[in-house]
Amino acid sequence: MKLEYDKEADAAYIYLEYPIKKGQAKNTIELNENIMLDFDNKGKLLGVEILNASKVLNKKTLVEAQPIIGKENYV
Image (cartoon, rainbow, N blue to C red; front, side, top):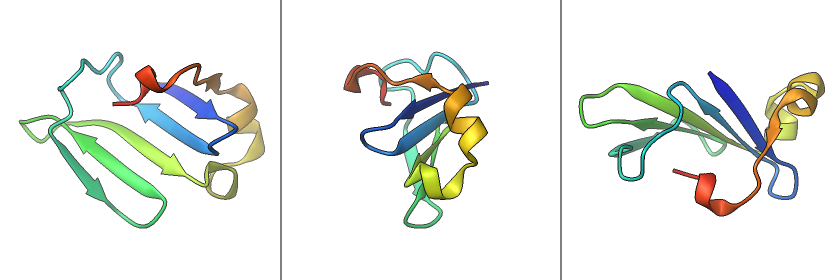
């Protein structure tokens, strides 16, 4: 598992499988306005995107996360 955080966008991504190859995420389900789940074509959960992460995750978790350098990291 790997956690990345973009402070500017206040968005975090939790990779359950890393790396996720381009096009591997075939289905995204929105749990609520802040949390989206990415699945492969077999229904396996690949990752979780968290918007407004500073309101959803604790500060220690965000400080320890790896920074997201560029948009190419997003699925």
